[in-house]
Length: 213
Ligand SMILES: [Zn+2]
Image 1: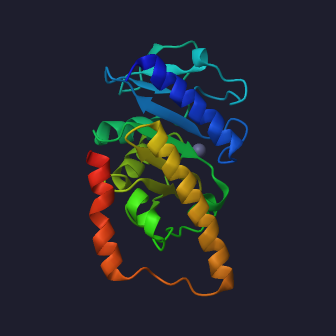
Image 2: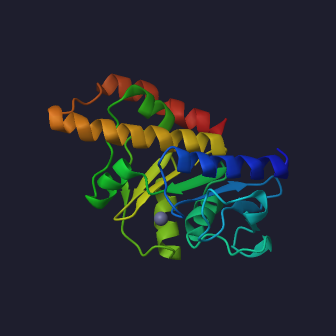
């Protein structure tokens, strides 16, 4: 895909994140891999509403700025660690989605109890160990969890989702947040019933297949 189109998709997704309440103010950040192997990402500390294409930053996989007047997001290590570790990941979205964050601060995984969750996320969303925000250690810890999963919770922080492109990563972010809200409510009603083992076995390969496609 053309670089300009990917940049436009990142900008559109950033504004969609804001509109749908997964981020507020300047929190959260997005990135996508370009066809030349470099990475376009959102800048540090800029309101999504005011953000334009010129504000996006292009960096190499080590984080060196190649294009753009602004510094890249302070959480760039998250994005670069995931993109370096997994060739099949083309985009990373980090958000402070409210319901997912409730699971993240209680260090509880989001269980895989809805069929579509298994297909699009690949199983339960685990909690990565706590590491300081912005650190390389946090990047490495998070990247470890998205080898075969579309999402990971960052302990005491928020949510990170990945996809082949920004559209996929966004779809996973919306699905994980919605599911976190459903489970939070379901637990107030009673016991959450797990999916049958047979169903989990049947769906398990589908996410992996879609990701490699
Ligand atoms: Zn964050």
